[in-house]
Image (cartoon, rainbow, N blue to C red; front, side, top):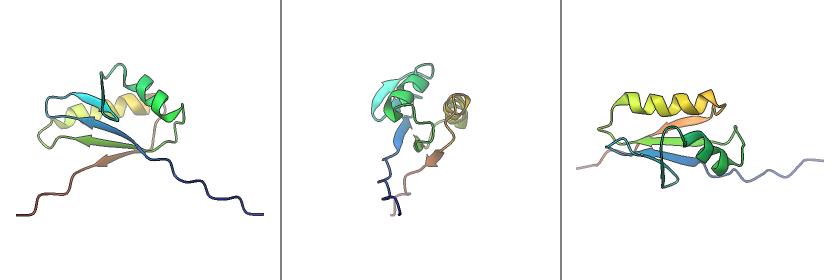
Length: 88
């Protein structure tokens, strides 16, 4: 008998603004607190999808730092998400 498909959980959205401010689902945090906040948002599920958004003018290094912190604690399903370019 087939099991019913589970509805996919919405991804956790991590944003980094142009000043390097870090947010998990719109709650501001620091790089050091990022894993704890993501653990809480994912209920400890390291397979939970994470979408990482960063301001276009931000240094790439800040994005890599955030990804590194998350992969160190076991999160591997991280997608870089960008906004569609404005059409003029």
